Length: 133
Image 1 (tube, rainbow, N blue to C red):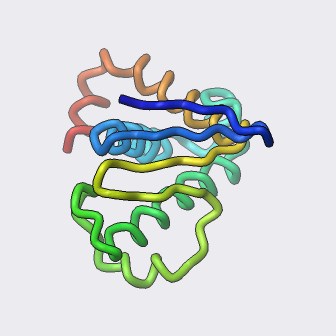
Image 2 (cartoon, rainbow, N blue to C red):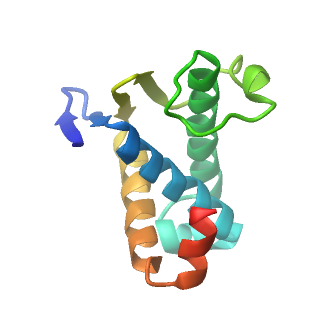
């Protein structure tokens, strides 16, 4: 079960179990891939560069975690080892029990917008089918 804590510096700490983490990252990755760059501002309320940078930061942390042996993450990609050497802009730590996210208010807002948008699209058979593949 997800736990949330607001830190003294206004950052938000999320603790997610593996299923919650995978649901959140799938939503983020599929929505980022589904939107045209011009839609980010209207759909997510975020600048295109900011949204892509955040999604890529999450991707890099997952590459590093897969390379480190976190087995519950989805199958890795060939470039995991190379990507894991880069410094992500997102702070996520992984363990066998799940992931811990430390988000700025802007990153949290983007995550919430993605989750809301995906939930709104859940009735669309095409989107659900693509996301499950």
